[in-house]
Amino acid sequence: MTDPAVTDRDAGRVDRFRILLVEDDDGDALLVEELLYDTDLPHTLTRCRTAAEARGALAAHPVDCVLLDLHLPDASGVETVQAIEPDTQAAIIVLTGLDEPRAGVDALAAGAQDYLVKGKVEPDLMQRAVRYAIQRKQAERANAALQIGRLRAEENARLERGLLPEPLLSSAVVTTSSRYYPGRAQALLGGDFLDVVQTGDGQVHAVIGDVSGHGPDAAALGVCLRIAWRALTLGGHRDQHLLTLLEQIHIAERTGSDLFATCTLITLDPDAATLTLHLAGHHEPLLVTPDGTRQVTAAHGIALGIAPGLGKWTPTTLELPPRGGLIVYTDGLIEGFADSTEARLGVEGLLRIIDTIDDPDPGAHLDRLIARTRTLNADRHTDDLAVLRLDWDTGRVPAAGRSPER
Image (cartoon, rainbow, N blue to C red):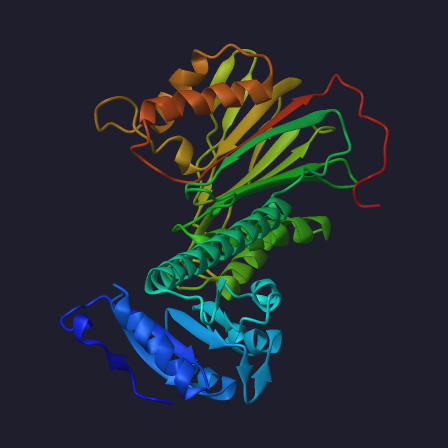
């Protein structure tokens, strides 16, 4: 391999095309060097005599373009391109003989960007070929990177969709409506989580929670806690013991000791017409009745992970009206701005909005509520948002079907 040579006209030029010539014939190599000299291309030229030597040179010093003879001591024809192309991101222009009409086409199929016929190349043609080949290779690399990015994004989206919950209900007495909006742009999951399951005894269990922080670590921990909650609930764990187990899982899975999680556990018993709450650093739910909507007064406990092993979560049991609903939410619903000032919406502002919404459909009611809060906030505060609404009508007959535990 010869040392890189810089032509006189390249002196003082910063941006030069790095060209590697792979040619074992000294006469042909000299002709290529003269052709390049006669072009307007600012360049540095390095020469190798074999494919093996070229692979070593490319590994040590990347180039922009390879001028490749198809007849080398250790490779011939398309095999020459196949020997070089996997080891470089550079454009490849093959040099063919006058009696090789198909060689150039075959080289293009093998990965080369262009071909030139020895003896029929003028300086202008050489200049255009090198420039266009480099541009085509750059476009190919950009398209490949975009395709990889699209595939990765599609894979991540499928994964995130698979991690979103599906309510596990077998009775028509209780219905659910939920909305989930991650704060991260183009994400499907955030640190908030929610889920609903119905056990074989007819009780409906629900959870909503919020992992502190933002980003993929918070989202992963939120998914972990939701799945753990579902498995533990279906396994018969309840109340204080369930929260203790969730806290242990939270501590084991979190990426930093500063991460904590708030959550609310809900157990709705349609037969007894009662609803039991456990609050772990979370907001009180809103109770929807024919007379209006109000905030529930409930006992508070500390969030998971703040004081491991010291948490005490006292239950609050409510007697339910024959027909009504319960709205639980994360702080993304109330921490946005209430108007053009710096005032936050808060629970009182949320209740004022609810009083103005007259829509009997629970899902549409949530959509209008969230739309109103987002309009007021006007993108000034960005956070994950999860809202879950449980509606019951004890006058309805439970739908026939298998228990979710069977």
